[in-house]
Image (tube, rainbow, N blue to C red; front, side, top):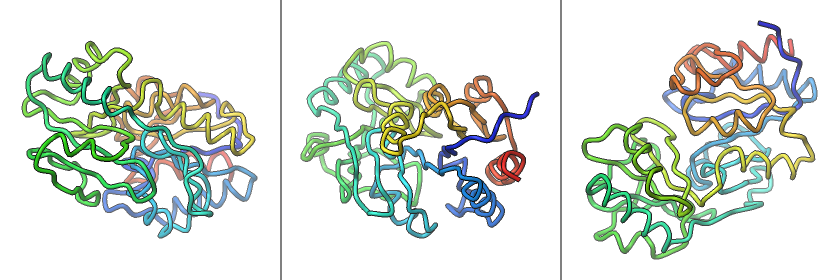
Length: 268
């Protein structure tokens, strides 16, 4: 396999990619990112987490660049601590999409990520959050999910696998929403046409960089649009089979500094 050229933009997912299981970034990965920055490359965080769920984490990492958040619905400037761009999901369309999904597969449990830097995650009864570090406020009824503008809806089925739920949802929602499989126990609905690839395009425009000059790292199917938007895609060793198949390269897992292995080769 030929070694790719050094890229001007390093786009990294967080969960299962840059972050270890305890939400930390290893010293080796930090050093490798510093190596890339020293060579003139920029680091772009690209995550499914909404701004409120990632803001404190980025501050702890000392990250001051742009971050694509909420599956591409938000572009956040960590240094300035402000949201640069945001797209919301029409709440009537979201409710209609849930109705179509339930007509297809039976009852599902739902949660939402609200818009805004201080938006909350609301979860209806029965929905279990996939990450303990991303707490949710419980509601009594589904109707309460739509009290404020939202960027995405998270859904779970009591029996179907994530892959099966995502596939069934895509057959019925049409242009009401984009369906994304973003992690274990995580299927999401975003505004139609919005994904990580669209978010990278917006962030690259803000940075004045061609996204095709980016090397991207990811681990789940929601990273497929990011791979398509960037010049080179690297799947983690722990990545979902769909992403491994689509990747230009497969590196080691997030626990084994897979990102650092590639960056040291490119920029060392």
